[in-house]
Length: 198
Image (cartoon, rainbow, N blue to C red; front, side, top):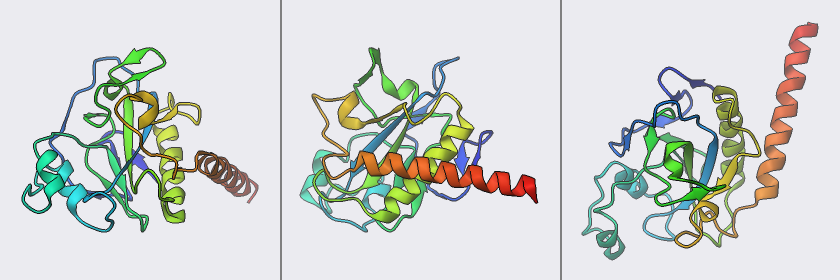
């Protein structure tokens, strides 16, 4: 995967513009990756409602739950569906409104310095193999584009907002995710060595 650091866009992602962002503080490095989980309506997959929510077009009359959230102005940078499709809503160098009131290693307001990725899912259901593969590939692309990010600067939403959030939940396999990052990284390094030899 490839990220254009001038536009802040992932080449392989489907882009839908969200207005729910602003500028990061001047001189603030991007050094945290936050993993979220979401489904709209809760527990239902494959709808267009997450896109509608992040683009402020969610119909509050479509589902009773939507009446409680339609007024919110939020968006992650990316959303990875169950089938592996990657959707982008905010350029990475902009401050997406995904973390809310939050704290990471004594630093508050995580939106200032983080990138947020939402996975379509629930706290208790397993995420799909395609989601893990795409998440790992996106993570490595982010590490390359933003050098302050690495495998040690990743947190779940529940870790930065433990009193409010529980996602990505027990259904998210952190060990599997980190192994995939390592494996893809090794494969990429081997491929680069092969290209040099040939």
